Amino acid sequence: GQQVWTTTLVTRDPGSMIPAAKYALLHDAALKTCDTKDGVKDGVIENPLKCAFDPRVLLCKGAESASCLTAAQVEAARLTYQGPRGLFPGLEPGSETGWATLSSAKPMALAEEVYKFLVYKDPNWNYLTFDAARDIARAEKETGALMDSIDANLRPFFYRHGKLLLYHGWADPGIAPRNTVNYYTNVVKTVGKTSADD
Image (cartoon, rainbow, N blue to C red):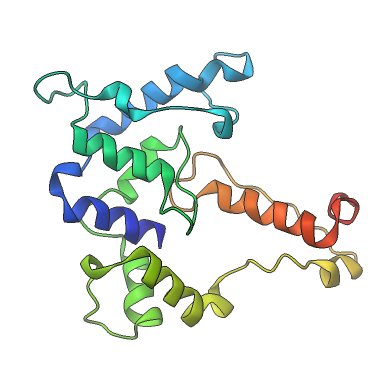
């Protein structure tokens, strides 16, 4: 859903397409804003959740150039960080160099094919008709049981002495890292902190 949503944003308004050459510009600006929040300047945003990066700092003051973003590009970046409100989180500051898979003229084949063949069962489904609220809800209904790993009740797994090591990189451009944070939080709420920690 995220990849189709992001591609649809920029395809509906071609002026919002952020050229791949400007991903480094965004990344450097995010690092400049947030790298030292952990007390160390090391080229890494340790905790993007504490990063208040606003891509408007890159807004062109005059004509577009390689060192600035147009208003439409700034809005596309802002929405990529935000994600579709109430549906799933956006991407984190520090992930910009991986956005080429998201902000392209067409969604990656896997994302588009999930909607064509699994959600709508229609090889003629067009990603330009994508509506986040409608289509993500339909995807959850049609494919959720098969594809989503969101059940927070890990009690049966823990009862059998299962151990789960969970990792997700903050700079992941394909799946919003806060999805994993939200899942962990839901597991702790469901099974209790002691069980989760054990």
